[in-house]
Image (cartoon, rainbow, N blue to C red; front, side, top):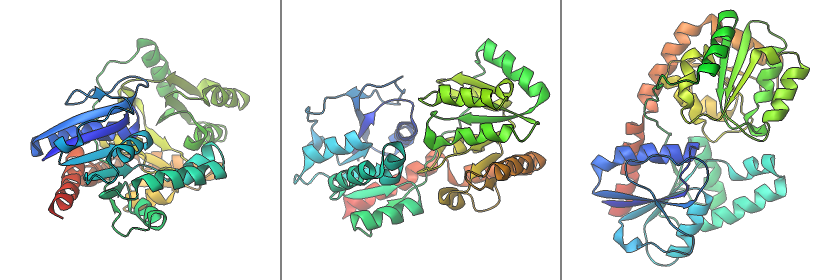
Length: 349
């Protein structure tokens, strides 16, 4: 089996990190894999095979591959425009609920129209894979297909490198001597809900927050921390290539998202045995069904504060439970085997 992976970008974002780990674990199981990407953006991820940059109007030799797997809007558009009516076997992975997420980013009309356009392009894909059962049900209605499947994201165990910025390490140790540390690794955008955690600091006095990541809301979040007089308990370290280097210092991981297709950072925390407090979104109710996480009611700051305290009180048992869930359900090897089964089913049809 020879595969082509088409990526919108080759950068350090969730969908492409998943694609990288998937390629690495599929390589021993197939004849060959080639990886192509369309847009330059940010720091380039390292793949087990060297990714090749292509232009949108540059057509690869699709006939050289048994199957083509695309990730992201631009990649799906590329595959659609170059393979229409040509009998190429294709798989796409949808990583989000398009309309709600784009409505939150722009407005409802943009979200609706963009989702309709995207769905029209992938309608004829040989297989459409989503990240959860909830997402599969969502797209069965929008694509009017009953064969939408789901495969949980899996990751390689993300181990800290031990190479932390000395200035950051000093500041973190000062905070950790006085407080329990809440960690977040995310793009700093409204959808991630980090403002809720900052507000929770104002009604508790035992926690401090370390935020790894960058984004358009950074200055606003820092200003909010200052206005609530909790800026001395908030440390923003910016974008880091290897965010898990900060994880050993975290007592808790907060996933405060207002919407998520999956939430890869929760799995990274689980792999490192860090207890998780998360907003009570349906996706987390699906992924964690055995008391591995502590949930809070979205936008309810008193509920979040209570969840943080509950997680600290049960830190040891929660860390063991969530690690067991990672090993049983969310490894990259498990993900690769599930995708391989999808590929084989398509090729056998």
